[in-house]
Length: 84
Image (cartoon, rainbow, N blue to C red; front, side):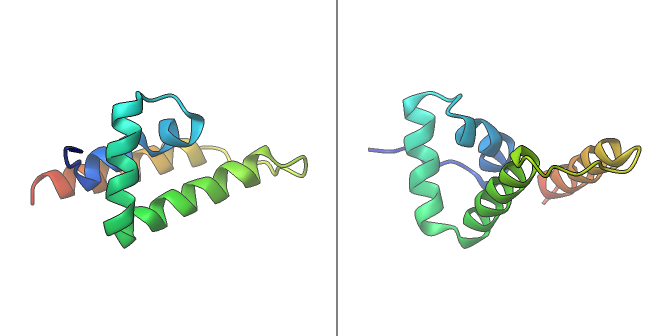
């Protein structure tokens, strides 16, 4: 039996999932979650696309402060969702 996992937990671990840096148990929980959650599947696909773009030999330079703004936006989103 696979124990369910929340969308928020999936979002926090999606990068580790793609990198293979999670336990087999967590991988199974996430894989099961993706089967029934279109939103998290879209997050997985989007993250995979970003990783491929950044890893591409034609990588581009991001504007100064982009990472900080991205992390701040993600933190606000996760904090807002935690309040629901």
